[in-house]
Image 1 (spheres, rainbow, N blue to C red):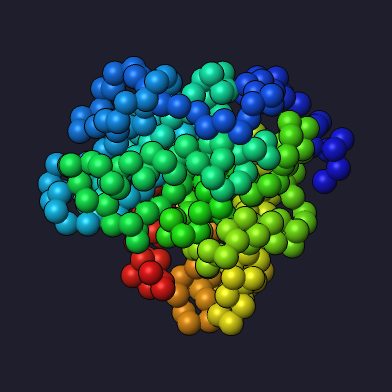
Image 2: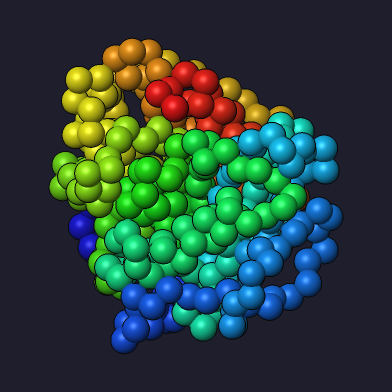
Length: 350
């Protein structure tokens, strides 16, 4: 798809999208954001990281009431999209309800509005696309503090997962590529591939049509993890009617992940986007149909899932009605993501 095509197709969204990128801070992009006192939350059982930080919003932490603080529990890191914050995102996705039912901890890092006025993670700037720097390092630091110092729960460091929506999905892809030793699996909802953009102009291009060069981006994702690289399972969710991040990005993300995993383990990771192990159609209770495809490695372990939702726009599938960027008519993205994480834990190498 050439630049003329995507600019025409997404013309009605350009003003809104452009506002989301105005806070990129290109002069000092590599300085990790700080977290400090934030607004109160109305969420029950939402606790906050207690270490003092000088300024900016603090992350939210949800610990189920029935969780035994002595028993290691999985941790899901959930990254909000533009204009959202941890409170609105937690309410929109209803992930805390799943955490209560299945016994895992959820942490919601917050983007500092001083870094980006629209609350977008700066996934399109190179300074935030590498290990040990920028926003990825800040998010990992939050997770590390939670693992080390939270008296309400014990986190199983082997079962730490990350997922996100839109800019949060793009940042989840970055974290999965740069920290394969930390994250056991990755979920990307309406997001973009790692290093699919390196500035605002290329970000627009990627959002409009996706990246055709999966080989290059797959090698970039593999290189980001360095000697720590290992196969990382991934689930990708996208709507067919998304006019903010083009649906083509879903398969670009999937292709990148498959190539990176093959480079990490060529003896067993030989998946092909065109040849899923299983593929089935379904109809959600809300009315949207969807196609769910899964890929396994040569040992039969689940490695990839693609959930394509017919009619879904740029919104969290199956989220709460009236929530921030949600559409309750689709299948539950929260349930799909957790189920995938849980299945890869039981069938994969971890």
